[in-house]
Length: 277
Image (cartoon, rainbow, N blue to C red; front, side, top):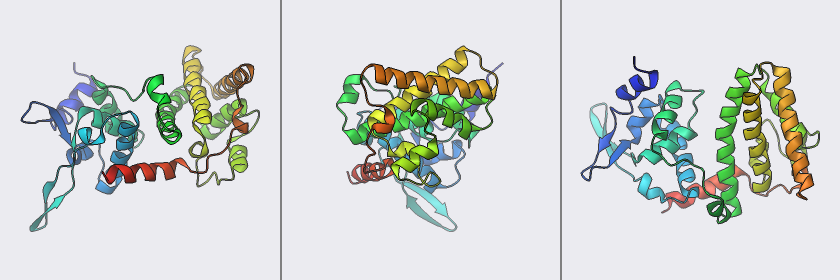
């Protein structure tokens, strides 16, 4: 019996795959948009822009994976040309990684499909060290978003219903008792409108990425099955990372400076550079 992925990919991702004159596979962005159940191009274009940044930060040439391809579409009795992209498998992989599986089930299936024979987003330590501080922040922030999706799925399976509470337990452990609201206040941002992770430097983001990945591991390894234990686990992992930072002579996260530019500002600047090429 075929799996859900095998059935779905035959009807969508395999079906919309194209082969160019050189024998290279590619996907058209507007067809992929439909397959991933996005109804408006302006919403899908935002996901593509995020994927372009991921591609740039990973050290690849954006134009190699996202070449622009005009497309003629019908609009009533007339036709018009609209922007489209000839996407490589890697470009599709980055797109589905930046899309929301919680919003579209097909996105989650696409993440599995396009991961096959595709280089992951992780880069080597040597490559990371060559990045600028802004690019380090962008790269780590993207990783945090992806790892948080995994952690929240694990937390849900571990009995967590109150994700804000679960998050606060992790922050309190890592930040010496500070909650997300406390961190936002110290950084001078509005937690209802701005994400505290967008106002962290690369070192602070790295500490939080470690908190997220290790909490996910511990929850799974210990088969945690209720919210209280899940929250306690998140707190203990945060504390352990904090103690390690102190032990090796590092700077605890609450003492690290808040960058002047938010991740959103850096993204806008990066997109402007990409689109002006």
